[in-house]
Image (tube, rainbow, N blue to C red; front, side, top):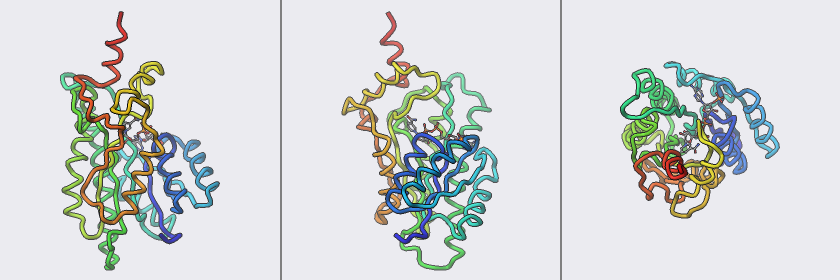
Length: 264
Ligand SMILES: NC(=O)c1ccc[n+]([C@@H]2O[C@H](COP(=O)([O-])OP(=O)(O)OC[C@H]3O[C@@H](n4cnc5c(N)ncnc54)[C@H](OP(=O)(O)O)[C@@H]3O)[C@@H](O)[C@H]2O)c1
């Protein structure tokens, strides 16, 4: 890869987004670190990328805004003079509800941030590559970050799951529609971080609920995104980086299963 190659990682101030930014930087990529609220975290990611000898520029955007995709790509063009060679759609919201209580507001909010904007970012990148009128040779790619939940269904976190299911189903459709300019793949992590109302004790137990009975390494999940970006044979497929968690079916979200098992 050349030293003008940029990756845009959404939600890169913390957790998996930060790991992803560092995995790409470690492999020689420059990084556009998108954030919404977490300026200090984004600056921390920026410093960590620069410590690896690569450039990192910050791009704020609220991905719940219907115009966010166009505006974010515009920011990338202004910051770097070119479009990112890879976009990792990592940012998402994850709010608790279930199939019986989900509200229209929660469904629409999850869909806008977790589904619509990632899809539109891919389309926007495709339109830019098309306008360059040059053979892309599979160099441009989009990685939609999904969740093992979409391969292992239960009705908890309903709005979130529906938003990720729609994104997962779109991987093949976008790969077909955006070829040959842009490759589109999915990446489904298992449980990697403590989220929402989960306690540390619950998380420590839940992190073992996979075929390997050990926590998933976030750096390895991040390196899957890098692998997709660098391997031009991959298109329209989804990598499952979850220690085999999707092969351990549960009737409820793992957090609730652990909670129920701990009850006296
Ligand atoms: N955590 C897990 O165990 C797990 C398991 C399976 C799949 N995943 C998937 O992996 C990805 C990363 O997970 P994570 O837990 O590391 O993410 P996270 O910490 O829950 O969220 C990442 C970032 O998303 C950004 N974000 C949320 N709403 C936004 C909006 N409207 N506009 C712009 N940015 C917004 C936030 O940025 P700011 O802080 O800057 O506002 C946040 O820091 C997600 O797609 C998630 O669904 C995670």
